[in-house]
Image 1 (cartoon, one colour):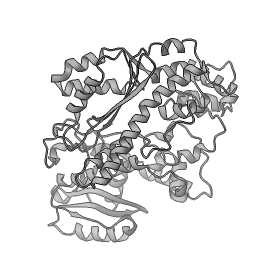
Image 2 (tube, helix red, strand yellow; image 1 turned 90 degrees about the horizontal axis):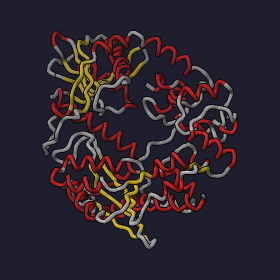
Image 3 (tube, helix red, strand yellow; image 1 turned 180 degrees about the vertical axis):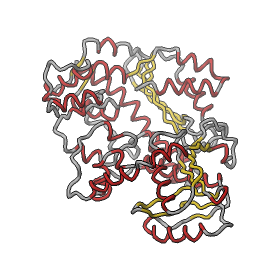
Image 4 (cartoon, one colour; image 1 turned 180 degrees about the horizontal axis):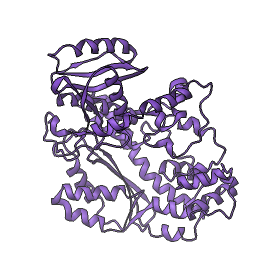
Amino acid sequence: MSGLQCLRKLYLACNQRDLGTPPDSAQQALFDAGTRVGEIARELRPGGVLIDEPHDRHREAVARTRALLGQDDVPAIYEAGFTEDDVRIRVDILARSSGGAWELIEVKSSTSTKDEHVPDVAVQLMVVEKAGLTVNRVGLAHMNRDYVYPGGDYEVDQLLAVDDITEAARAYAKGVPEELNAMRRVLTEDEPPDIAVGSHCNKPYECEFYAHCRSREPDWSIEELPGLTSAKREDLRALGIRSILEIPGDTRLTPTQERARQSVIADRPQASSSLIGELDKIIAPAHFIDFETLGPALPVYTGTRPYETVPFQWSDHVLSEDGSVSHFEFLAEGSDDPRAEFAETLIAQLKGAATIVVYSSYERTRLGDLAEALPGRRSALDSVMSLPWVDLLKVVRSHYYHRDFHGSFSIKSVLPALVPEFGYEDLEIQDGKVASVVFLESINSDTEPGRREQLRGDLLAYCARDTEAMLRVVEAMRAST
């Protein structure tokens, strides 16, 4: 799969893996969730035997798998190991089927079968059949987004859906040997292939070597052009242009891209003539709000679905008419569904607001979800949504650029560029995905009280930083114009 995405990624993964960026706690949590889904999925074909030899003992796993294949009383093998044509695989679920044939099931924590899953499964199909097994069905198990968690143990046959992708996998498998040969040729070279960064770096998966490959780009790379399309990238590279500094003034760019180009060339922020008018829409008392949420693959709360977004925390920095600023916050406690308390406390907090300021449409979307989930509070939530809202992300993206944004309008990029002395580096939590992981640990009954209080303090500090950051960004843009 690495080779299909990028041959340079494959080479580095096999020969220079230390150049990759290690997964952060949020990425690791996703990996762990996928592992847990795979374990639960074994109940789709119960009674099987787990090949628990780790991947560095693959030869032993293959030998044990071979022995189990000959035991008719073993209905399924989990993590079955095979090596054929110098390709090593582990099959999530290999279950006996009719007429001495086998069913191969790959488990994914996504909510549907995706295009990239087919070659993943096709390689396994090729190897298993080369090993002499007859496969009459290939399935892709994924999360069922319509499953409503009733509490207690998961109903695995409802939690997961299994799509029959036999035809697609078999068709793709015909071309796998040729693809493998191309990859093997690359792996015999002394140096990785010279492939420039591009859209393939995060499709279908974010590449762990992106930072390394990006370091080969010149200062102010064209990769920092906001909204850079694949076509525009190819056009610029075809002209030998790799840096924003090299882009001719008559090049057709979007207004945002041209503002970025001008900022890089002039080494100073660029603002549109409409910026102050947009900022003047922030009328006191203005509430700068931010939410933290979780959306686990495996539902945590009764009545929720896989990946359903559940808000658990809000922060509100209030800019009063006299210019003073005060801060308020909420963070759920305990194992109960936090949505009702979240909504009630937020509705009370926003009473009397003249403006609500957010960074992106995320908070407004979440309030719409809450109105659906909590019909008794719909009227009050609708009243909140009818207030004047200012999306600061849209304001920045459409009217302001500092070259130290480096192409990103994320608050994590905008804040240090505009207010370098005020960032996130001093916080234990620096990312919303990490916050959701930390929150789940904080409400886990196995978490020690002292650890729980520490985690709650980290969560409160992070969410408060996000809302104060918006205030600081507004102040900095006003001061620079």
